[in-house]
Image (tube, rainbow, N blue to C red; front, side):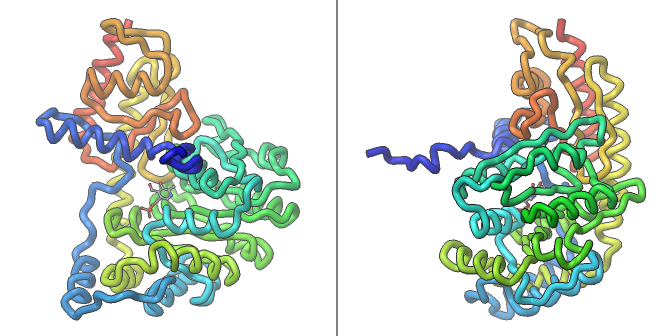
Length: 398
Ligand SMILES: Cc1ncc(COP(=O)(O)O)c(C=O)c1O
């Protein structure tokens, strides 16, 4: 009898976490690696948020909490969704989990049956297909390309819908492309979902990291019918620089939230007790904290795109949100240096790590093998140092 289940055999470890681990291991060996792999802001969690956690810990808030989150935190989330997203949820329509990833996992497990089709626009965040696979759902990929700012035209989505379509995963702003759907596009998706009766899992984790005056539109805010079909996902990792705290949440119809809570009650029980008052502080705290972070990201975004486009053989579109750039490196395929041939995004990423000591993530893990992903959640100094090295490594390719 095999030790490892067939289910576990089908899961690939996260390539984004793997490259970060590899870069950190090289750094620990004393190698000077420039790391563009990490999907986390380089800023510290704001002090007032940390203070709230310390205070609650000191006050002995260290026991089990309700599975779906404390009443205070759910209330703060309800208020946030109303204030910032135009969404009207009751507290029994909210569930807080150990990160947005955990919320997505619970949401998919609560709604997708074996054989159900889940439409995933590609390039996609690495965990969506794996989570759909764990639920034994069938991932249906629909390609988005650079010409439409990495958003999928509505006709393509419509063509992908079948009677078995249970869900569409929408991620705007997107990881890895930074693509942002505008209001008209979100309206079209909402109409299609209502017409065909499929659910929309709307991953809005990068909602605040958005540039050039673009508007973030929460699809569930477009009417009661689409709201009933939407599971809105959000969290604290990106907006408040709280990746290590593991705090995310979902808002949906009560029936879905109850099913998610049942799953959570037998796996995680509840999220960490003393992080919850800190999450309340984050939601109710000053918004300038986020604004300052976004304006710094914006400067880096423009700088890194311009430096990438200066390298012959690389082209990079300007992303509208998040903190990633997704340059096309396919013109480099077929070239080589010292016997190392670049054949795809993986061999290019390996070449950069080994030869130039620069960590980027190959696009293959995101369903886009002509690209690599660089996170600019790192200082300007590191961006320049890394880009100098990439330019040099690319110039060496014959
Ligand atoms: C698109 C997307 N959704 C969800 C997450 C998960 O965030 P969390 O840290 O809250 O689990 C990430 C993190 O990289 C992400 O990029």
